[in-house]
Image (cartoon, rainbow, N blue to C red; front, side):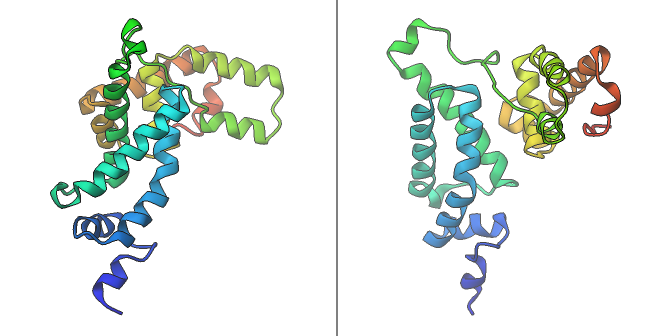
Length: 201
């Protein structure tokens, strides 16, 4: 088996796949596409509700990556690179839509729809509906940027550094967003259960 054959297996490390992609190895590109297309799409539709529009943006992103493969920079995390890129693409492309010019642009105050893992945990254990509704009420009181940061940290298991890149903010801002979000929830309700899941210290 050649070195390239080893690199382009589906279990290869992302950094190896990225380097293989830059060498125009189509198999590496296809593996990354299959691995990350659903995740990138899922992230995109959380803050822009038109799924078909988001699909177009995601497809354009992966086409652009292939077309510019020889000029791609090395990346520390393929996952965070893709999420950062789709976020920028959606904001840019949405502003170009004629009908969208009459509305507010997606900005730092964009909507962000997310079901947190803790909700899934409660549902799976058949927690009474009133209790679950109260938790959702508390989560809905978070700012949209807090929701996005929390989603990336706990649902996507990304580091603060990666989140900073994706959201185009500095490291300290990410820490503050997540810290203030969790503090707000704990202050209002459910401290004992949340502390079992949200490990930021």
